[in-house]
Amino acid sequence: MQRHWYRWWAGGFVALMILTGGAPIRAENWLPQAGTWETGIRTGYIWGLRKHAEMIPVNLRAGYTVFNGQWWLMPAGALEISAEPFASVIHSKRPHTDGSMELGLGLPVFTYYFDTGTRFAPFIEGGLGLLYTDLRGYSLGGHFSFMENIGVGASFFLNKNLAFTASWRYRHISNANLYEDNAGLDSGVILAGFSYFLPQ
Image 1: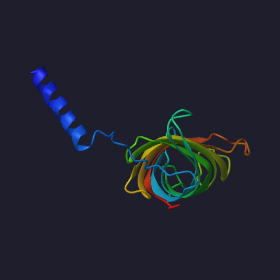
Image 2: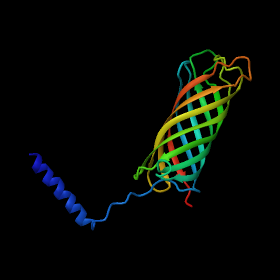
Image 3: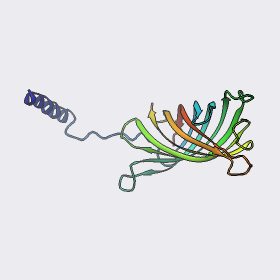
Image 4: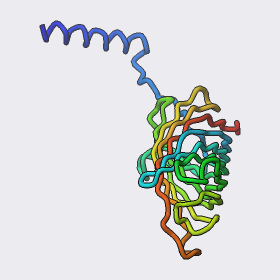
């Protein structure tokens, strides 16, 4: 039975080589090339990891592909640096907090897309930012905070210029002791949306 299966597999492989002229099938590079600009929009859900606070964010994104990594230097892929202005509506069970909001800017945000030779491109990302929030009752100290993000995700390229993206991030905000209270707030972030890569 195993030999019968092997014959079918070997026969199919030979037929494929004949039909393609014996040439290797080359994977197409879907990743943005160095010098490509990106614009995008994402939304999702943010939840406090130790303190109950839920947020609905809308992130805008403007990015620039700095360079394309080669396998002999690092995993093949593309490095993008971007800015992410965002706004979030906050929902919390604590008194006087429901309906609060936050405004922020992620800058810089670094994203490294890994080249899989397919439309599917996993990535890692991380960055810093500034945040203004009127959220009260969490010992954040004041309205102004700093923000750090790190996360993973994936993009699926619908064509050369348009991709659907989903990601998960760990986010920490605190005021770096600018105020007497500085308890900070750690959150998980799920984002999904679309990116458009401008033709060069």
